[in-house]
Length: 248
Ligand SMILES: Nc1ncnc2c1ncn2[C@@H]1O[C@H](COP(=O)(O)OP(=O)(O)O)[C@@H](O)[C@H]1O
Ligand SMILES: [Mg+2]
Image (cartoon, rainbow, N blue to C red; front, side, top):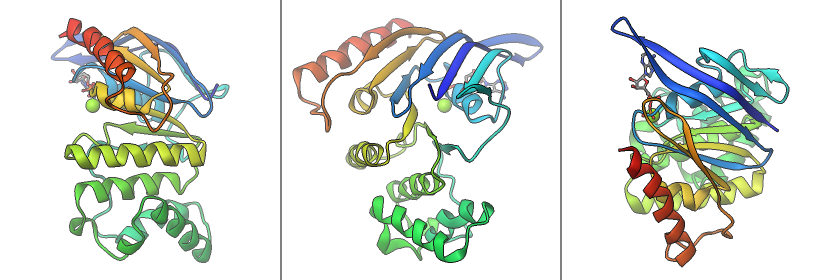
């Protein structure tokens, strides 16, 4: 088990009132698993991922990595944000080497690793470009390379493709599946898009809203790269969407 959530509850104080955002969340993530968490907007997906990242903490309950409670951010838990989050003053190569520099890795090795991951995401040609010169899809590719280059145990992804047009989104989803297979990463991917979850995940957890609770979990056994037009794909999509619609 890489990540374990035990009875995780999170509340915020909003205008003097306690609001329970997430309630009694329990799940484990296995090594190498691709887990998707789907739920309607505002159900607490980002809050949940931020707690796994160590950027925020449960009000009650525990989140463990291996056997120890998560006490803060770690380079072992890479985070890819929904919003483009590259450093605008650094070029693509420098954005990717940044974390390695913090770790004290020598320049030659930094450049070698950064170039390896830029190649993996198809951006070898763009290493000298600045973020403002890149399309949304390219920026998210850099963000993925920037996380992977640190060799995290777990990759946490918060709707990373939601701002992209549908063709680009599908392309990046395919690339992510390929990279996940090659790198044997554990991925926790949050989305409100059921199609995306069924395309990507080994397992899909469905969250309700007000408060966010796990209402259902689906094991997705379809072989990859998945065919969106396959009857089983469409059937699963319909079933999961049904659970979400009941929430809205
Ligand atoms: N730091 C915070 N303080 C107060 N309320 C918050 C905070 N962060 C999130 N919330 C509230 O928690 C709820 C869930 O937010 P979020 O986790 O962003 O949902 P999602 O990512 O599923 O759209 C929202 O109602 C939001 O306003
Ligand atoms: Mg969110």
